Image (tube, rainbow, N blue to C red):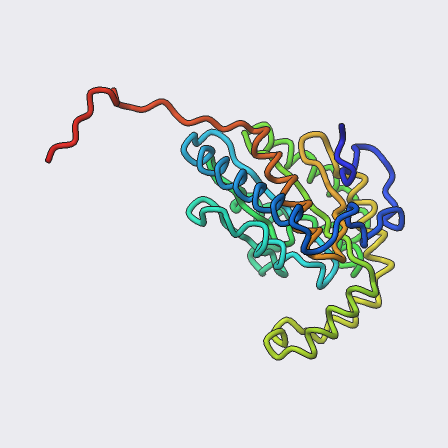
Length: 269
């Protein structure tokens, strides 16, 4: 059975059809919620250890969202049980002068996960069909071709042993406003505030259209998109943790065969 938040390939996407307040009939603080989250983290940790030892597969996790959508919080609460030795987080900001002298995927490829590793993209190559589109940074004739380039790039990674899973953290415009106001009220969050916040907020409609087309054109069998209800942070964390745990379990990493005959090993006094 397909996951209810999965974007099926070649289907039209309307974000208004997805409720960002969805909570799956659960309540914050329910013992079931806490237990399911613990179970998922445990499975993720166990599978990661086997995958690292196996050294044949890798996992790329892509997080995209509107501003204040919860990417950092997701990383903090969902990935905390993973071994940092084999898990890296990479954020992609405005491209440098050197990066702009190459194709738009050049700077991305070097950060994709090597065998046995997990990499989380906090924003990603999808900025080049989102921000670039909304702000008219390149002509339409350029960014429209990038959907196919991205799909081909992700197919290349998949064929090389990298499982790809992509999450759009779906929040409402009202929820974004509340989160910005909470940042203003909390000195520890002031560093996250930007003069561009309100300017970008005014482009909510344009970003919605850009995301809808991106999700529709770039959700594939080998690199699926999920639209995650993200107004309720606890439910967002639970859903993503369970999807990741199931993904890693499906990858079925195996312990490698020992390079020595263990039965003959004797540890000297």
